[in-house]
Length: 120
Image 1 (cartoon, rainbow, N blue to C red):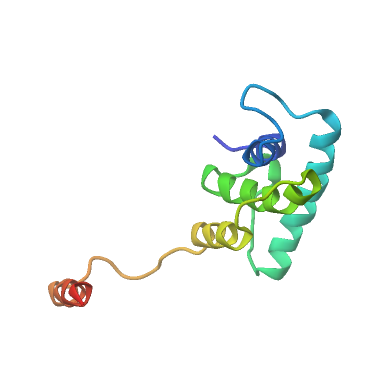
Image 2 (cartoon, rainbow, N blue to C red; image 1 turned 120 degrees about the vertical axis):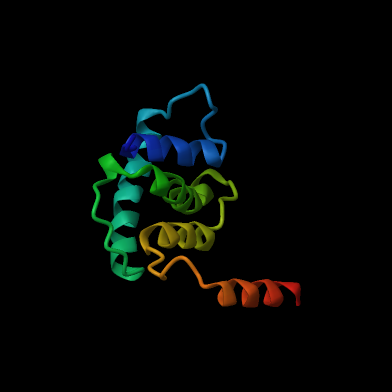
C-alpha cells in the first residue's frame, strides 16, 4: 500500500527519536519536515538523476524506508540528533529505482565460475 508524505515524515521523526512509536508528530514538526521532504524529493530527481515517477503521497513501499532515512539524515541536526547514513539511504533508493536487467538464468558455466570466485 503506497505511503503518504505524513507516513514518511512520521517514520523519519521516529528514526531520530523525536517522536515515539505511539505518538504522531506535532503540526509544526510535521510541516517543517514535509517542506524539507518535498525539496529533497526534487533534489534527488535533479542531482541523483533519478526519474521518480510517483508523487510523495503515493510513495511505493520499497522506496518508503530509504526516503524516510534520507529525510531523517537531513533533519536530525535540527533536533541535536545523529541521523542515519544519507549515502546508504540513497544507495538503497537507487537500487530500488534501477532495475537489474541482466539476463537470467545464468549458464551452468557461469554459476560454477561464480562458485569458484566466491571461494577465493
